Length: 152
Image (cartoon, rainbow, N blue to C red; front, side):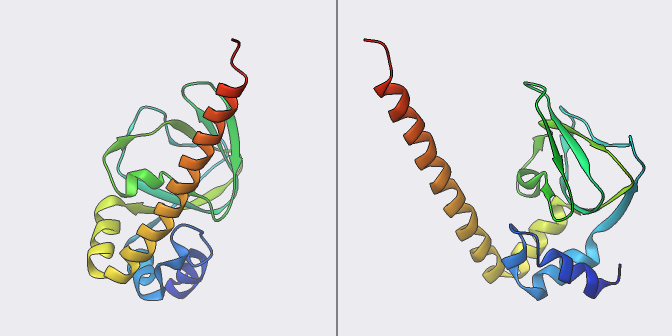
């Protein structure tokens, strides 16, 4: 893909799309495209995670290490979001179900972009804070439900 095509694609990715064209240009220029064949493993559960991947084409299977649950993802999915910000390990194994392409965004590239674009960093902080607030409320609702249905 050309840089402008990569930018247009990244604009449609929910977590990073709102960062703005200038910030996305940095990611598009610095990211690398990796092509996978059906059956190729992109990453394995337990491995150190050095960044995130955006699925550009094809479908991948994510199999959770803990419970073995499987999820299929396709274009526009950001994998390894937490690894863009912090050192962590992969919690699932990602395997290509068909020929696929992913855009590899390293943590250092992502952090440099945020340092260079404070408005983008603010937008991302707001997005993540909103998601954290929602998750916190959902956990509280589950806790209240369990408390209400606890045998007495």
